[in-house]
Length: 559
Ligand code: SF4
Image (cartoon, rainbow, N blue to C red; front, top):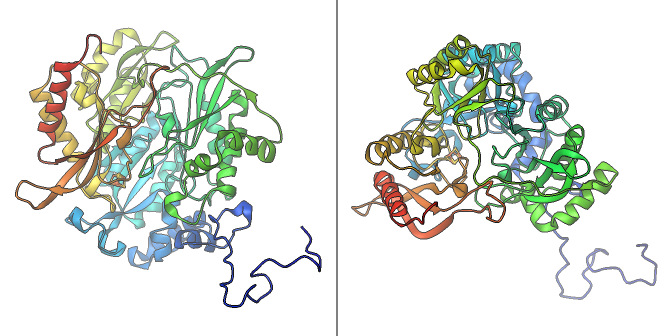
């Protein structure tokens, strides 16, 4: 609006207060949204990204830090930009969870790194699997965890070894680009994409196109925070917990395509993704994905880190406005309305022996809480090859699959997998328990998780082997919910609790009754955090056993 000479100037715009004694009006602070003109970095993270594109740190690692060692690393690279290449400093051993919040970052960190390898869609051939296994054995003290985002995560990595690690990964088509950081993280995909009997569209081409066009692309490397994606025909990923998700659906007129969900995310302000109500064919998934991530880049909140996920924008705008902005400002066309997908009664984890559409079979097997080793992965490659398979898949439930096995070889494969610690007929406890990284390596952790999870599974298998229902137990080392605390039957959030002698000990806040991917008619939802419902880590097995026994005693027939 033009301001004429007869129009009174708004207070605060003339350089003098409007009234004597009145305070100058404050300019609204805004949320740091680029599209509204807020380009000035409003916090140290935004400053770090504005000072230098984090993707540029790769050259410094290769040319400087790998030669001069850990002490030479610029702190803004070390604790900021390194993440864009999958690198986090790992926690120094022996620092208890009570000191997590009080120590400075440099006091908490070791001179080694955690390294995530991005495995979009969880798909590996045996060359890739062997390369990961060999890197683990040579550079990572034989560590390798299957994360709940289908990554492999190493520990004990030295900056000096990164050039060699990248060379070896890239020689087989793997990368660590944007495996962490405020950028498009690994794209979750169905572990049975391209082979499932029930699948109408293999979403792999859309995942490949997104990775090829947009990962490592500086147009998308400075987002307000991380951006998580899931693209799957089946309900075999935790799609509602992603910033954007594409889920298979059949349109009555146009056939198979994808239903689009936006704004999911867990952590401390959990929200489930919401349907946009549109139908997108496979060929347009990458374009629509780029539109959604561009909205996040341009309109996402950047002022406060704890409001910088897409879910806050979706919550404030609502899906109608989100769809309108996507169509008008980013796609330049309307999207087709689409029907809701049919959801199964429970998420699909693919454990056990299953027929593929080509008549061969895949076998899904469970390590315990996703913990494997390089040596075990090397054995897995040999077992798979010996059974005629050339492909392995990782799942977002910290499990793995061996594909393309003839019917008469499945029994032998199940036995061979058991021989290397991977169980295709696991107990309900082993099948349903996941754990995040926890205090062993994570600088944010308050409690131990992986070892607790392994102990929990072992104790419950011993004491309640007969438990015959599906159950999910997600163990998290802090409120960040990397292992999806709120979406499990029993979600465990690590914190210090009061022990039997009145002292502070490791323990968990308990969330009960969460779930994702539920059947229509039922509502996917978060577990209830029951005030005062806490257990010490020591008492966790007894606690879970009590809950499970009570459930067995009181469940209704067929429940
Ligand atoms: Fe670390 Fe917390 Fe995430 Fe676990 S939930 S990996 S402890 S940040």
